[in-house]
Amino acid sequence: MENKNLSRKEFLSITGKTAAVSAAASLPLSALTTTDLFGQNAGKTTSPPASVPQAQDEPIVLEKWKSDVDQQSGPTPTPMPPGGRIRYAVVGLGHLALEEILPALSTCKKSRLTALVSGSPQKMQKVAAQYGIKPENCYSYQTYDQLKNNQEVDVIYIVLPNALHKEYVIRGARAGKHILCEKPMATSSKECEDMIAACRSANVKLMIAYRIQYEPHNRKLRELIKTQTFGIPKFIEASNAQSSANPAHWRFKKALAGGGALPDIGLYCLNTNRFILGEEPIEVFAYQYSTPGNPLFKEVEELISWQMRFPSGVIASCASDYNVHESRRYRVLCDKGWLNMDKAYAYKGQKLTTARAEGMMEKQEEISLAEKNQFALEIDHFSDCILHNKEPFTPGEEGLQDHILMEAIYQSAKEGKPVKINGQGKPPQRGPEPKLD
Ligand code: NDP
Image 1 (cartoon, rainbow, N blue to C red):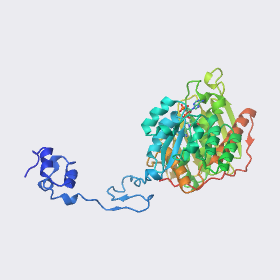
Image 2 (cartoon, protein in one colour):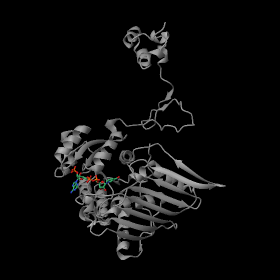
Image 3 (tube, protein in one colour):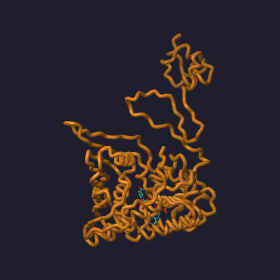
Image 4 (cartoon, rainbow, N blue to C red):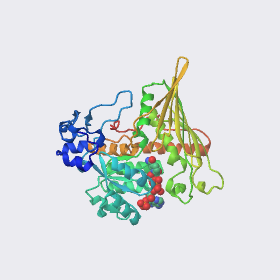
């Protein structure tokens, strides 16, 4: 019997079994045979072999059908049931919170958004409706301390201008909540020390949101350096630069930002160099410049360029600029090749390339890993630390170390000479390596 003249309605009225219908109905009618129509192939609507581990964090492994010629898809996700996830209050609904953090929280596996804090009731009402946040879980800066009584919040995530981090971290810790704080941690090393002490005395965890340390391409590059796949690293050039407008924005007010290009974006060069090398600078030397008369740079620097010397002999040459077209990259020169990261500090699109000699050739390769949301990885790492009582991989001490170095960089630029760093290049203590799945 030919079927192609049957309407879909006729087809459905002939077939009796739901399972057969649901499978066959997704096929074009011309692809169906008589046996399909009478449900005789219903037995083919059946689950292929799959491994289904009992443990919540073990992925379901589905039957493979792609050959190894293609890049394989990652393991299936292992989200926790929503009721078991760590619950977050996000403080400050600006660019980063609305554009990156709230969407990332929706894709997290161990974390979820349960509360908001904002100075704008109108904005917060709209955001609360978008993300299903109860009105009673919405706070102002005045009612912030009442989070203490909210049993639906485990973590407070501070996404405010830099100079407000200290106050809201300390108040949040006193409310008995764990704290995730945006970078830069504060506006001085002294503030960082106070924040660490407050979290310690309140017995809550403190993590600084250094997303690059959770981003797969940057982590891969770090592994290639550690295993000396391209030999011994000797020199790094790194820059993070972008353009700016609107002198009224807090980023151009020293009292709110703490500095200009350095703490905002130059910090990525500083922190990522320390991360990929696994050692600490022992000396820095810097220059800075701001175009005279440009209202953006009346209070904060436009351009900062600095060198860092590491105990192993590596020298890193870094630059950050607030007044050029966007560029975010670094290159590690090793004695047997180089590793290059374009879009290194961007929210996505990292491009890792490597080069080494092979006989008469120079072999250049691109290492492309599955794109993952680095904000979600970072947030889930903190949730994992809370669930399993571990120290975060990027604790407050990591933020403090960057502030000590930034203070030395400014001092060097001011004095026009190198500044030695106390601490003998010893890395700050951090928690175990994150398990990023
Ligand atoms: P925005 O200016 O876009 O947002 C800051 C928000 O803070 C405002 O929208 C406002 O929220 C609240 N706020 C409270 N008091 C003030 C004040 N006096 N002036 C201005 N805003 C105030 O900043 P971003 O979101 O870009 O940055 C926030 C933090 O996140 C900074 O510490 C920054 O360094 C960091 N950041 C980190 C990035 C990363 O990749 N990890 C990237 C970008 C920023 P409301 O109206 O709800 O009260």
